[in-house]
Length: 198
Length: 344
Image (tube, rainbow over all chains, first blue to last red; front, side, top):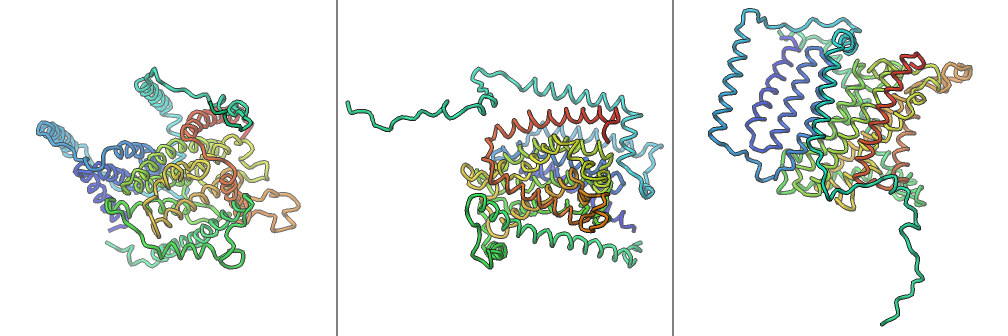
């Protein structure tokens, strides 16, 4: 067995275990950490496919930023009441979704034009994955790339517009004003004598 | 089947990589130990004190005494802490901080791994370091630690964006993500180094680096006056030492990267001149990289002794409202300059 195949099965096993743990663990922080592990293992699988640019990007963007914020929110949940309530109707919906997904995956697997891909032949030495991706992205797919960027911008503006509510008791600071403050604006020197008793 | 396992050359290569890792990590850990000594001496002199002076001549054995003390102290596990995660957190902080050194080019041809997306790899690993602190804060089951971890998560995510944008400028000028190629793109003398055309981005990068490593004036994560010691309140002995190690190796990493990305790494400022041709010390070599790195390491200590701690809302304002617009504008300027073929 080639070393890569061995690694593939190792990463695959870790990925599946972590993914199952994400949905079964009762503690939400543990579940979020398993999600991080499964993302990381997925990135390693991409690395095996010699897609090192995408693989490192997955670690940088999803694990390094998105999931940090995920964990941030989950950690706010009270430590000793993290169990998720089980209700029968949710379970039914979950089973229905799982059944649909399993059917779709099965249909894809038995389709006649489905051929299991073999490992890619090693790229020639000096081949730059990053450069290849960049030149395709900014020439052939420039329009789609720009459209995705605009869609993200709309999402950012939308998120801010939805959550930014003007509050009547809102405090606003003017940093320029704060740093212009001098000693004589705040400090009043007195001669130190106490008030005469009345 | 397993024919690779019986191939001697495979194991020789594995041994070679392990030896390389040891050759990087042992000097790095020794530097961390003496960096703490330098910190106490430098900050001491800046505050008209002597700093450590009792253990050994001029206090030179102080780091060794500190290490022995930390290693022999008992590690206390809080009874309500989340056991496995509490033990995992220091390692989760240390491993990325050390792993990032794998792609560091020390001299022309002197590196452990020459990977194409080297800069991205370093960025990815430094962003992973945040997990050690977040997990530590949560697993300690202490309010101070949790608050420290919250501040850390928000701060790192905010400054990572500015840092990433600052590095986009480096990529635009060098046209590569490979650290060695970035250094080679700066060859030609001191005026060809990237710090000149990228001056605003250099400042953003340096300040973001200080914020990412939670050093003063951005150390609200530990803020001893309000949070006791932040995320590592509950850690003692060797477990605390590991966090310490992670923080200091991250500081050295940021300094080394500043030297490589903006100041030409191993390149000499006298490169190509008559002087460099006659005096070999003045020609390019690893000593220039060491010198530049040491200067930025000193800057970390200098900042610590000079600036008062930022207020939390000021930190967020600086990251989002000042640094990100500055980097975006400068990226646009660089793009225009490259289009007009002025720079790069």
